[in-house]
Image (tube, rainbow, N blue to C red; front, side, top):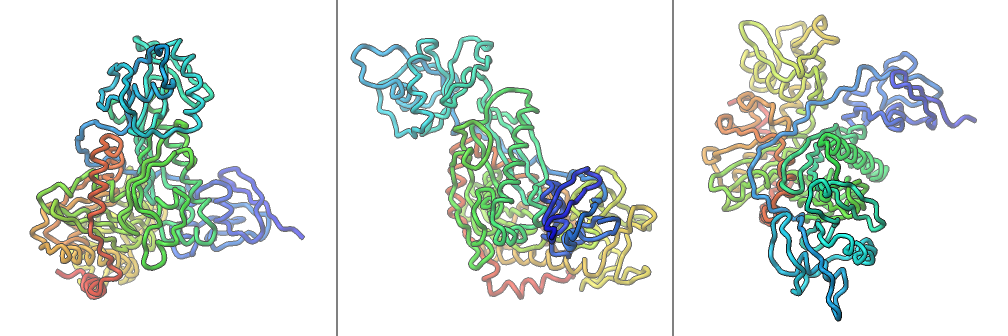
Length: 608
């Protein structure tokens, strides 16, 4: 009997065979189409609507029972991805160094090998040298240096190469030589690309790069930096392809527990490699990337490394690994220089990851006299409160409402999403991303709409909607005549927002209590991430997401996690200081806090 069926994706002109009984959603994934499935295939979000042989169905709930044609409606839109963040000037003192050295011909009777003499020239004098400073070969003691297979091969050809050109440019870290190449007095000679020896070292290619990656649940942003001076040369972003396995980390973790880590690890590594390739193209320079700094929440961190997130979904919800890491990038499928390094900042707790460590590195709350609060609002909202005398952190399970899931007309920040709403002069007015025709409500638009419904009295303090329209429990913002479909808010949607904002507000209150801090003592509220950057702070305070007097204290810091990932490459001392600060952060587990439930219930309403 027949065990496979042929599925033809009409718009994409892709035809493939799949086993009978798999869902249409799984067929889309196998075809490499990266479908949007925020609910993880549970059939609750309705975002995976397709036509199978002309009939509209949910792809995640429909099995392939025979040969069929699948139409995926609409063109795939690129989200509004935030790449810019709060910028803090730091001294350029990277771990990755470039030094010009001169290897002279050894004297008769010299005991040291060519490789030892190279190490002595780079490390032996114990001094730190600026870029391109020429030094001679010293006889000082050499620190412990990692030596790998490529180094063994290289040491055998050093003599021959030294005879051709005694001046070398060495790319190295404090305990490893990553690359070196023949140098020259002329820039033209330096820039000649003569790479290709067996040891994996490139010769005379003048451009040296590093890259920072912010691996977000929804988006991935990459930055290319000049390894000689730290200048940002290019920025590139993509949607996270893991969204096809679920919109939030819990759904993705559940998928991995059933199917293993390979699919989610491989798809995100592939996208990171595409980003790196595009960054080099944008820079219009040839060269190698020698270091990558990567930040992400704890689940993204684990999935990238191929680690099961099982410890994150079972009590007591601890990371499998939390300390800072320096790894070989090639071991994780990242296509940079053969000896290129992968640097990961530490995770703070189960649901406070390396991305929050990146924010801390960008903002350095641990150095400030003033008391500040960091909020990174998302499916999980991470927060850090305190100053140089002490920091505490917690994570509130705020749910996916602000990212569009579980909201009837909700969507991510894609073109056409309503991002701001205002009731003025007796009319409901709104704007959309890229001024396209409205297709749904994203998080910032959702907050604005609820705040305006409260202000106009159509929504009461208990969250009960009295729309005054055909259905009292449904408010239509955009009639079907103004858009492809009606865009509206339901009583259930409001309930989802209440749950999300109550979790965040309760987390803020309990964190302040732990730190013995009053609202008036908090001097600055940092809002990080895309949602926080576009959110109206006054409206967020109006619906009770943040305390009312915080609205005037808000400072939007954009992609602070990405900025922290860059600083990790720019200044080794800053990175290590932030790693030590992370170790000292006190962690408040809201799920284990006996006061949380009462505090959460108190924050559900919209009353003052």
